[in-house]
Image (cartoon, rainbow, N blue to C red):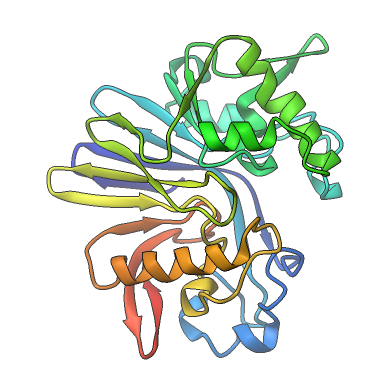
Length: 284
C-alpha cells in the first residue's frame, strides 16, 4: 500500500483492482503507437508494449480530526454494470482497508468526487439481501449538482442501477450531506471544481503546514492525458469542458510543489507536474 504525508495529513492508497491493457474503451486515442513514444509513462503507467496500466482504488485521508475515504471503488455483489468484469465482485477490499489501519467503523467521512460506478461502489454492502451503508458512522459528502444530475433519468440504465444500489440507500439512511463544488471539509481539506467529466465533478485539495496535494478524481483518468490534454475520456459528459479543465489545471500546477495523486494512476500513483516542451509530464 502506498502512503504519502502532507504536513499533518496522511494519504493511504487501498487498491481494489489493477489492470494492464483493456483501457481503449475509456481512452480510445491512447493507442500503443501513441503511448510508446512517451517514455516517462514507463514503468508505472504503461508497459513496454504501450498498454496502459490503470488502477481502481480508494484514498484514505487522515487529518488530525478526520478519517476520510475519498471514492469507494466498485464494491462487491453489484450487478447490471456496463463493464462485465465489474459485476458480482467478491474482493477483499474491506479486509485490506482494515489491514491498512482503517476498519470501516473507524471512518467518519466518505467523500465522492463524483457519482460514477467506480467511485461509489463501497458506499454500500449487501447484508441479508439489502444494501446498507458500509461506513455506518460516516457522513457521506456528495456534490449537490452531481446528486441532482444522477437522481433523474439520464438515458443510462447502468447509472440507474448504480444510483439505486450505491447512492440512494445511504441517502435514505440519512447519512448524506449535499455539498457545493468548492466546499470546505475541514481545516486541511477543501474541494476544487474540476467539471467536464461530470457536471459536478470535484478534486480534493489537501493543505497542511505549508505542503499541498491534490487528489484528481477523474478530470484525468491516466497520466497520458498530462502529455495530451486534448485526449478526452469516453465517459466525459462534456469533453470540451473536460479538456479546458485539464489545460487550466496543468497550467496552474506545473512547476509547483503540489503533489498530484491520481485516482486511477497505477504504480507510483503520485508526482508533480512539470513542463515538457509544449506540454507537460508527471515526475514521480
